Picture 1: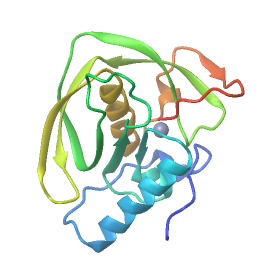
Picture 2 (picture 1 turned 45 degrees about the vertical axis):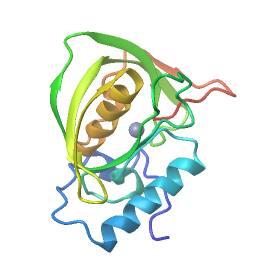
Picture 3 (picture 1 turned 135 degrees about the vertical axis):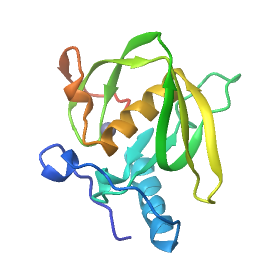
Picture 4 (picture 1 turned 90 degrees about the horizontal axis):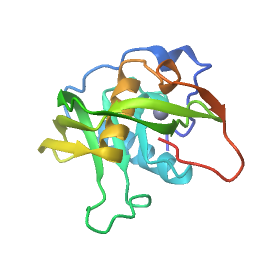
Length: 168
Ligand SMILES: [Zn+2]
């Protein structure tokens, strides 16, 4: 594994804008493998490539461990060059955390749904409306690709209490 360190807000890299992926080769596949490994290891539900030090427009979302609504098939997807095409007018506050901002969490206003487009690892076109937590994670991760952190948008920053975690 090449990339196994989480880049935090203390590193200037986290504020850089990530670059569009031109083609899906083995290098990209390895990055995504590393991202999923790190996300699993830290019990995260989303990760952007910049968080492991790779300035490419790639995000991973994995709600399979956290989505307990049996009616909703939990989303698990790696997205290359994700773009938000449209958003719900309805917005909601909910608490977020971030592997790159250890020890902090806070309420962030997000759109209730977002229409997202991108490519999967197999090069397939992805185009879906994501709702609720999936929408929140997508907005949080796509923000990372533009150097934006949840602490820029948070209503009130809080320290994490022991035993709590929802880490986007
Ligand atoms: Zn984050």
